[in-house]
Image (cartoon, rainbow, N blue to C red; front, side, top):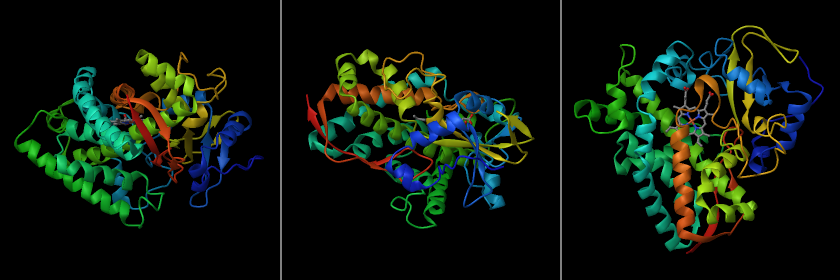
Length: 403
Ligand code: HEM
C-alpha cells in the first residue's frame, strides 16, 4: 500500500505555522486517495478532492461515522467509545436520522432567526467594551465571547457557568496544544465538569421547563421516542465544542483574511450587504476544521486505490475548498465569489446542523464590528493553535479604532 509521494500531514508544528496548502494541493493533484502512515495508528487514507469528500460524506453505508467516530485516533476505552457513539455526529442510519430529526426540531429556521436580537445584543455589548479598551485580544474579547454566550442563552445555562464552559470547550477540543490542555487529565476533567453542568441543567429543565433548547430537546418526541438524560448530556458536551471553537475560529480566521485583503475589507465596510457572501468566502478560505474521519465498512475502490474494510479515511476540508476543478483561481480570496460550494460545514448526512446559526452569528458579528470600528490595526502576529484538527487562533492582539 505504499505511495511514491511522501507527505506528512500530522506534525502539529506544521499547522501551528500555517495550513500546508502546498502539500494538500500536491496530494489533490498527484495522489488524491493517498495512503498516509501514522506514528500512533495503522495509517489512513488522505482524501483531498472535493468530489471524493462529497461522495464519502453521502455514503454512510460504506463509510461509517459510527464504527469508530469521526476523530482520527481510535478510542481505546470501550466505555468511552460507547458514550461517544450516542452523539449525533457519531451515528449512522437509521439511528442517526431519528436523533437528527429530534434535534432538528430545535434548530428550525424560525428558532434560529428568532435568536438574532439576542445575538446582536451580545455582540454590541462585547464590541463596545472592546472598543473602549482599544487594545485587545480579539479572540477572547470578541470572537470567543459571542458563540459561548449564544449557546448558553439557547440552552438556558446560567451566566456564571457560561465562562467556565468556554474554558472547558477549549480543553476538550484543543487538547493537542499543551498551552490549552497542559496535562493528560485536562480533557477528562473538562468532560466530567461539562457533563455535571449538563445533568444539573437537565434536572432543572425537566422539573420546571423554561423557554430554551434544553427544555425543548428533553420534551421533543420523534418517531415515538425522547432523548434520554445520558444522550442529552453527550449532546450538550458535543454542542459546547461544536458550536464554540468552530465559530470563534471562523470569526478570527475571517478577520485575519480580510485584513490581508484591505480592499475587500473596505468593500464590506462600505456595503454591509456584501457580508453574507464574505462570510461564505472566509469559511472557504479559512475552514475552521481541518478534517473529519470515516471508517470503511467494506472494500471500496476509489480512484484506482483499494480501500479495505476497516480502513480509516480522513477528509481534508482545506484541500477540497481549493480544488481547482470546482473553484476558479482557488487560491484567490474573493468575497464576491459565486457559487461558493465550500465544504467547511461538511456535506450530506452529517451536514452541520448549526450552519445557519453559525452564519447568523458571523453576519451579526461582522455587522456590529464594522458599525463600531473605523479601523482594525494588528499589533502582533496572531498566535496559531498547535493542532492538526482545528484551524484555531489562540491570540490576536489588535487596536480597535472607534468610529
Ligand atoms: C463556523 C462554524 C462551524 C463549522 C465550520 C462547523 C463544521 C461542521 C462540520 C464539518 C460538520 C460535519 C461533520 C461530519 O461530516 O462528520 C458539522 C456537524 C455538526 N455541527 Fe457544526 N460547525 C460549525 C458551527 C456549529 C454550531 C454553531 C453548531 C450548534 C450550535 C453546530 C452543530 C453541529 C452538529 C449538531 C453537527 C452534527 C450533525 C450530524 O451529525 O448530523 N455546528 N459541523
